[in-house]
Length: 334
Image 1 (tube, rainbow, N blue to C red):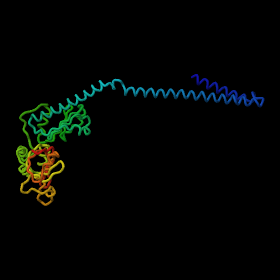
Image 2: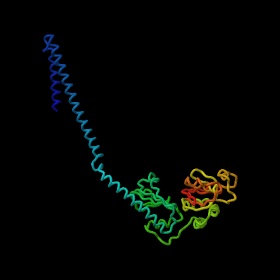
Image 3: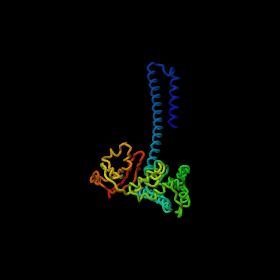
Image 4: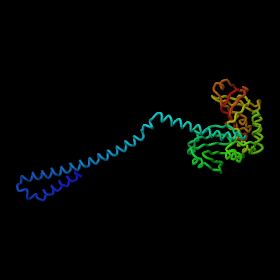
């Protein structure tokens, strides 16, 4: 306020000088003096104005810095940087994750204890979290998947009965075994195992194959598998066979660095190479070839024509009409 009064007084002083200029100046030499006074006054005004502006700028800058300091202090609060607090938060997160996984396993156990065809149970949470908002656990099996979300709202968003997604609380189940949808839902709604449920199959052909597949050697396995329809074969692979462990016998066709091509058909028809087996000559020999994933050390000891007994988990299925081969992962020679 004082700065403003000074500026006004200076302006009045200059105005008076200009108005009385002719009266005051009677001699030419005095003109320089008056002019000097005018210039001095104008300079004083400019200086005061500049000082006033600078003070305002300083105040504004200080205010901005003050706000910045507040923001920085909120990010670097002692509580957040306290190692004990961080440790406690991490331990709580680990415990929460453990509880959510325990819940998913409990739900899955209700189905298996009810004798529904639960198999190949695996935790796929890491691969699926980016696809579902609020997902904490994604516990999958071939016929059904159990998902646990951080809250009920997130779970309800995934509910879609037309796609066999059902929600209860913060848990969602995705039923892939459509033949047993009613049984899965009954167990899920009652939240406990139920004895004596009837197990349904896609067809009698699927039922017969599934009940006997573990007792088949490779020749019997493929004979009964290839006589089914495409839909039946796909259903068996998706619900019962994917990553199912099998033990078969065969003969070595050729080896790679970490895999071996094995002939599972008639020993008298052993191909000389994989190239021969995969030829499009109408014989469809590739449908009786198994590619077995093996450790390098085991592969190194194998030669063409060796008879071996081996095990592994089915990762892809062969097809007679399209001349596709089988593939087993996590294999070993017995």
